[in-house]
Amino acid sequence: MAKPLYPAPDARAALLRDAQRHKMTRSAHAYVRGSTEKFYEWLEASAGKVPQGPPVWICGDCHSGNLGPVASRRGQVAVQIRDLDQTVIGNPAHDLIRLGLSLATAARGSNLPGVTTALMTERMVEGYVAGLQGETLAPDEETTPKEVRRVLKQALRRRWKDLARERIDNPRPTIPLGKRFWPLSDAERATLTALAEEEGLRKLITSLQHRPDDAPIEVLDGAYWMKGCSSLGRLRYALLVGVGGEDGRQEPLLVDIKEATPAAAPAAPGAKMPADNAQRVVAGARALSPFLGRRMLAGKLGRRPVVIRELTPQDLKLDIEHLSRDEAVRAAHYLALVVGRAHARQMDPATKAAWGEDLARGHSKTLDAPFWLWSAIVELIQSHEAAYLDHCRRYALQAA
Image (tube, rainbow, N blue to C red; front, top):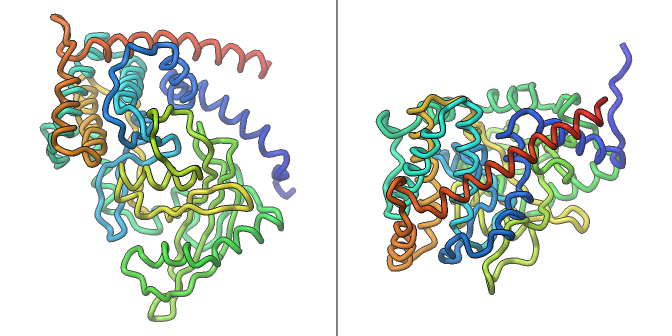
């Protein structure tokens, strides 16, 4: 049998760009997830329509796929923001609008009527304000979407073999090369091995799951990782690392190394953030998603900043693609509650109260949600659906 051919490092970019374009043709919701820059182009053109909230760390790309269960260093599990590539100190209203666009697009993809989108917008604001006020995220059947309860239960049951089968399709300590994992060049392998030998990475790994502080680590395998959508085209590697335990056995774990690039999300005027993009991502993660942020490390591969984190079996993605009316409304409330809590961690009581009052203003007689939020979602759906269809046309012409 002929061996599969894999792209050389200098040929990866074209394949990754094509994979990204293809992923974005799958649905309007997939296009929204992969077109962060277009979202901020609309915001820039709509200056003055959106209220200016208190400057805090925001996700910057707050769509439903970027929220989900994550594990703490000690094994606790909670739904938090799970992708912080675009994080900046900015306007919290931007996260609300981005989440609203994502949920509204998912509702349209589920063939739900427009009235459901209106109800989702109302419940989203209620959930966000509840998050500002400190409401808990207890997964009860009355308020929590069925998909969230299912994924949380799944996360709590998962172990290393589940992560290995899902991410690398192999519970044994090797990374199988194929569609998602490509071989490293000699230079890449040497650079990644040197990174793994740095004390910062060893301390990060041994700080998790009660591992011995002086436990040795060893790189077992590595590969280039074709993963994500909006991040396709950046450097992305998977490292399989063995950690020595007190009994002399090695515990395998999977480390994700992702290039950090400049954020498309606009920062608040005068915001003081790390100039290094990897340090910016880690700082934002620790403010917004403490469970995830404390498992992340900023590093360098050559001159390129990278974010390093150990993947745990409990880190899962929510699939808010096909929803009933009731589940869509619950999802809007719950996910906005998660975002509200993430923003509220950074505000003092007076700031939270003032921002909550600002959000309460501007309700119309026919919609129990700020009119600026509703009009932003409507305009964004119009512009993104037109752009999605044009994207599909161009992709079809290229394929032909």
